[in-house]
Length: 115
Image (cartoon, rainbow, N blue to C red):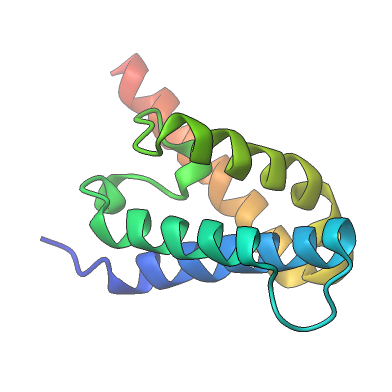
């Protein structure tokens, strides 16, 4: 079995960056997250730590199993829709890496499906 610690840490870092960007732009926070965003960040980190599919997926956003509670899923989707396009300006290397890994994951899934 692969060690997924690195993948989990990348996932948590990416989601935290997106939540931080969202909180800064939507809630006017300069350094610390507001209470709502801090709770969402903690929840997303906890879900990533417990994910049984980490070995076979690239990022939570690519996962077909939705383990978030519906209200938290709505919140994280709102953050992703807002922060995703803006990541290229605030965290360009992370955004590019995410795009490349997403493409690779889609190609791998297509190849599995065709086989």
